[in-house]
Length: 411
Length: 157
Image (tube, rainbow over all chains, first blue to last red; front, side, top):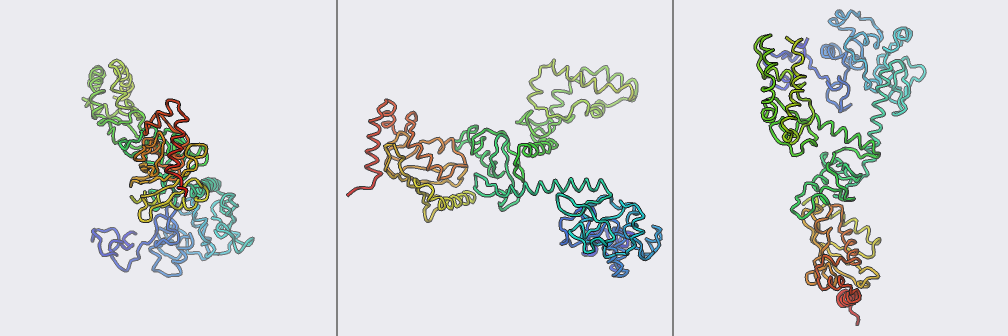
């Protein structure tokens, strides 16, 4: 099947695979010009996209059907039906070339048709181009399988009451008839995303007016995208551009400015803040600020700290670092503070393993139980270094108990 | 460089707009150099400086607003926190307590406030500071008033 689709690289005169290319190098074959983003749900180019916007059900056929007849291919593009006139597909799917076969009915029988794709419901009315008027037959099948009328979803349907398609219910947020009456998950999904979008838009609108007190410009009117971000201070609610406030906080203390009372504090209220959080929108309530801060921190927690370097380096922020501090086996911290203790105190356990099974490599055992031994919580270098030997011993032996506990079942 | 220029331009526009609002401050930008400004401020009332008009010279660094502008009095003034010869001003917000949220306009306001409330404990003009610290308010006031008349008021006749 893929051999029949023209190779994109070949079309540009540079396919490195040559004869072994899985795509066709025959100019007579049609090119696959389908937008994969649209297939997955949303193409940000919308109607300006240079690729074809067809649904997932068309993925296989449109390339084949493109040259057969223009009328036919149009049908494929605008409807979500199986290309009924093509001999290949019709025989394999088992749907005869019945004229006037309901488009939506056959679409639902295709296994890879994504069940929830709200964007298609908002698409301008393609179903109506392939109107077969067989209302009775449509109604007899499961109502949830029918798509809603996209004219109605987009605004208003010229046919009104006489429209053969289901008219969606009104969404209170976006004001469109795009809620499918018989697909509860889809409704729920749309309502949720719609509300979220609306909220974001409102916040964005509200944020447009906000000025930075350092450059005296509107933050969201700055020339580059990187500058169009707010820097939220943890302790007060004064707005700044992220670049302005970061520049100020990082300007050299040698210029005679106090670090804590001037540089690290809010330029307006002089409240000391320990960190700045970037955000594209400005908040209006405390909860919104919390949400922004929390999501930012959560994002950082998933990134490994480059100072800590898995236990090979020293992080100046210690336990209050926002990034992930994970000790890797074999790292400096692992070797110096943890390894010797394990070796010393786990001789017995190791013997057990060796007696009962093949000789296990110590490292392999440690790697196996690494997740039990060192939880993924940020651990500062200082914290480990200033523990007394006894503490460390206790901690190690406990963790090691946990680690070797499953021995019995394991061998 | 670019940022300081943009910011000063903003301030310039703001000053043009606000001229009427604050009659005590007249802030003028040098015609050819946006980093040089001069200001005329009126001495606050109920102080020995009342009735005087004092000229300030601003020299704005390229790192502005991350660094404070340099301000000095061009008009002679007898004040504990102003150097009598050079006109240098001892004011925390112009040194270690600077904040980028300050503007040239607000610096002028701060200087007016300093004129009304001198800090004799960190003097640049020791004579003036000593008068105040020793409690000779009357002596300080008459000295300050005399210099205001001599230097900051239009000559009569």
